[in-house]
Image (tube, rainbow, N blue to C red; front, side):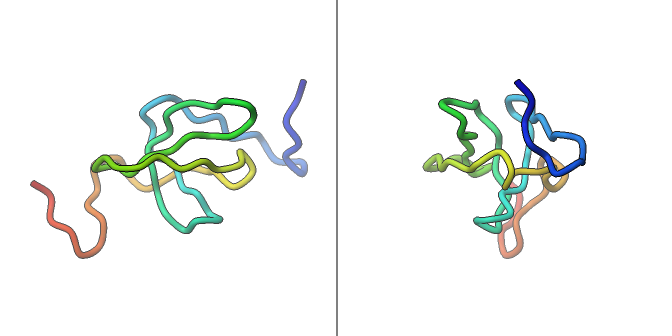
Length: 72
């Protein structure tokens, strides 16, 4: 079965990869896909959220600090 992608190549994240949830407007770490939904969590830890695959694409560079937060 192929994902509908509107003629563009499908983005398939790997576990641990930073991805962008365009609908939520934030980056998260891809954990898994269950029942057709991607499970993401904040880079620094926290509550997971779900996103539809068509709303998820490549994220910011892994390890980059969020605006207003210091690495450490």
